[in-house]
Length: 246
Image (tube, rainbow, N blue to C red; front, side):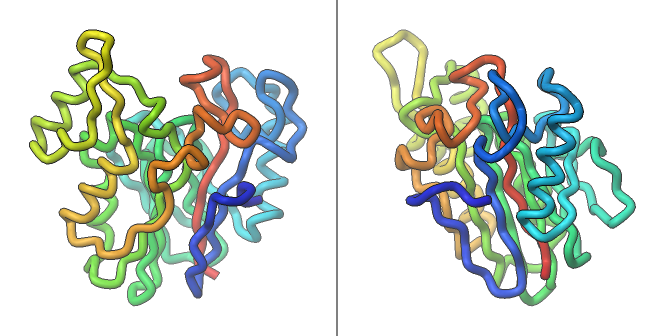
């Protein structure tokens, strides 16, 4: 269920990490084919079958949140229903997958071996600047051995934003200016979302961050055969990244 090379999933003992693509499901165009989002207009029976396919492939029970570009973090249990409102979740229950759906936003997976705890966060620009990663890190007692993976998202050559987005990040941290590139179009910038996330994680004491390095192979907008992209397609399905304890 992992994307084709050169996308690499982390090999962390004690956990399973997965990242789906848009391939391998039953949804029809424009949702073809492994759409996991039940809120984008796809047929409910197709989404349900696709979700069962994902669960079988990842060897755990994914819990699908209702993500609202916010900063709320939810502890999930075997009784947590799909559709609970939150943009991040965590658990210490084995075989239960913290799961984030995306179609341009950044999925962030976290694991603490010492605490035997996993988490996942939905980091679009609104959630990122609002503090979703900071809130997620608060469920861990320490960042000393914390491992983090950044999944596919819209890349720095495609994520065009206005001055309000840049101002929101730079207002919170002047160093964020390094991750915005001015365009010739007036008051437009290219934003490096994974770099902005790495900056925040590093400032919070996270020492190990793997995954999205800003190269085109990780870019949802660029990789149309592998990934959904709302920015590219308008009407789009959702793929998912998740993590579970073994």
